[in-house]
Image (cartoon, rainbow, N blue to C red; front, side, top):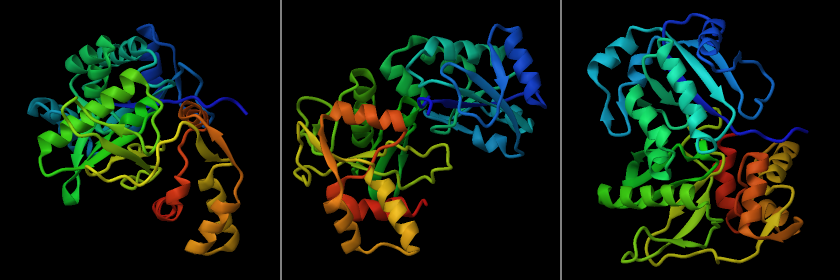
Length: 321
């Protein structure tokens, strides 16, 4: 089996009608591109499809910082087709090469760009400037958005563009919530820490640390480009802690989520709490450092559920099956 290659998708409205037109336009500008096909993408590869959507204008109405220029949105709305460009890498692996693809698409008639991992749309100029900087803060600004959910829950969307979990926090003050989420996003990308449930985080020295707990992404279906297979860090309320931070974490192999999926399909019904608990207690596990767990997750392309929270987290996962 070939190694997994992460990828990111750009959506670019433009004058093209067929993938071949985009491929030729990119090649003419020095980008080696190919029409999309069903095989897994290779590292560094650029693949192109063309989609037709009469609602492109609404999908490009807002960016991370607010509404896009009305004149640009009107031009996008008048366009019925967009290039869907897949690039075989995380956004931080080689930002310069992603910027080269972006400039080629712009020069070929692309009106604007949207990252499908977050749905964040942007005019070309600020997008290319942020991408070309290559800094963690700029890359997060480029690709990650903040969303307010019901019950004062704020969450990020788009961190899987870097093979990293998103984050969420419950707070009454939007500015405070965004400070926490932005700091955690940039910290993950800049430092690449080997985090695990039970670890703590704070955005600045004066803040009281909050415990991290990783949960599956319950807001997006796996077929939605915004779905994060690496889950979401929940920043628990101050003083709340349920899982112990460990230097070596018991890790079930094969992944618990795969075992539960197979067991439920075999039973042809939903598993009971007792059955889930029995599978967890009987499963084989090895003790791994968090950094090795992260490597394993990136290799297979998703995070497992927490054994100590198996019942609750399995209910989240099974809703997407």
